Length: 141
Image (cartoon, rainbow, N blue to C red; front, side, top):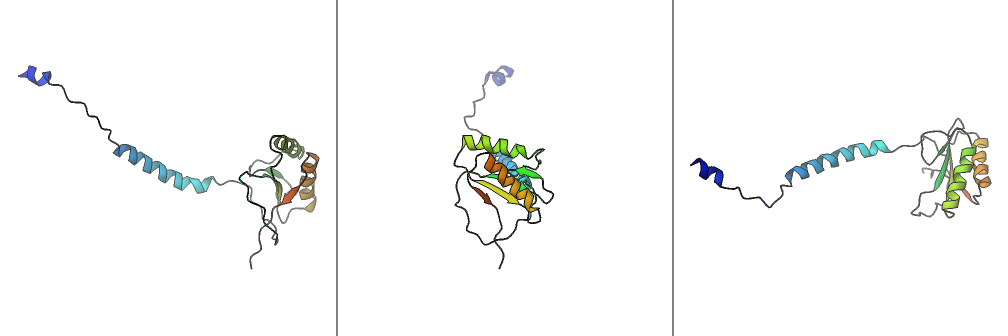
């Protein structure tokens, strides 16, 4: 009798149980939905308001130099300030060599000194950028 019990082989199951995978997927979906809004980083800048024509929306991200109230410079929503304004020129020149059609923008705080914003524009032009745009907010009615 014991031989008969051990002599039988279990038939292999040819199906995959996907229920645990669906559970894991749903947990990951909830985690990503909760953490995604927290990942939006950048430097807090109060942009000046102006009624201006909006830029054409291209697929490529523009090269953005941000100037905060204290005159610190940041590149492309990076929260780490640049140690030297000359870094703007070096990085802009490198980006311009790789992608000459990329738009270059200066995003200056409304309370920042005009000198800091103009210096960022001058550094971009010294790097070879022909046109520099300014980022503003549309005024509320």
